[in-house]
Image (cartoon, rainbow, N blue to C red; front, side, top):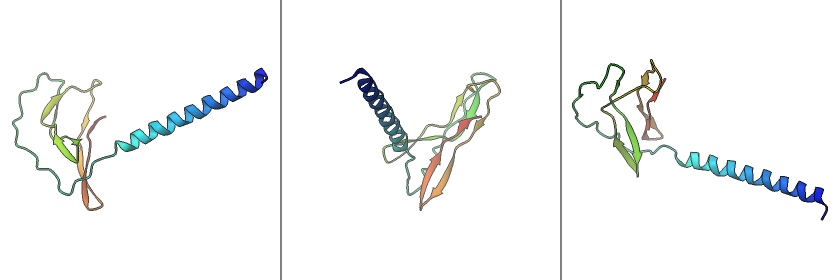
Length: 107
């Protein structure tokens, strides 16, 4: 087999493997879709503590998917990743008869 043909085949194989990797990666991101629940979880009672520093921001309500439901992870102080960063609170969204938590984020 001539060297040029082998080189072209290897390039095609590399392109195919790259595309395959992109498809698998995008499928992984889609697989981490939001969890839908029939009823919104009840916000637990908690006490706000004193801020560790003037830079810290209070994150009131935050939930993360756990199994087929959500676990409360809010009620905490967090330091913005950049100076002057603002926390945009998450919220519950009604979707197709179920509830989905839209996470908060830093802006």
